[in-house]
Length: 139
Image (tube, rainbow, N blue to C red; front, side, top):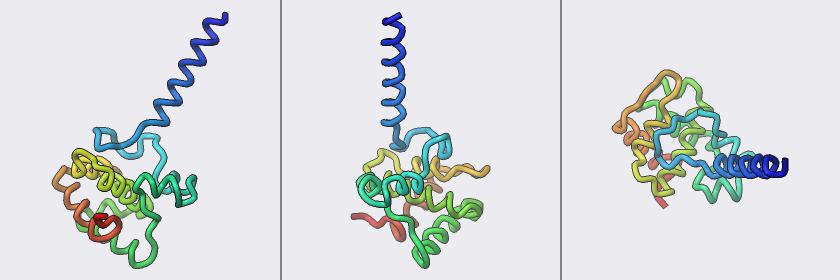
């Protein structure tokens, strides 16, 4: 009985560890697969410490928000039907751009492929150019 309890505890700890350590470093995972969004992460962190350390900028407002949405819309107008989702994806993509992702164009293509829209790495590159001009300039 003690072995089963210990085994169950170890499995639970490993599961929590794996979920807690997962991140999007430009891999093949799709956005919206049960992970929290940038706004949820920044809200939990109070838009300060953790989000800032992860390279996620604060949520843009006003003219800055309009500029980010326009840059995304230029690549594919269907991506901005859900503006909040587009902004969340953009904020998360800044983390990939500033975090040294091995293939940020692919990461952007995966992150912005939602709502029936599938992007290419070239599309992702165009999104990254727009994001560098607006939400996440190079530091």
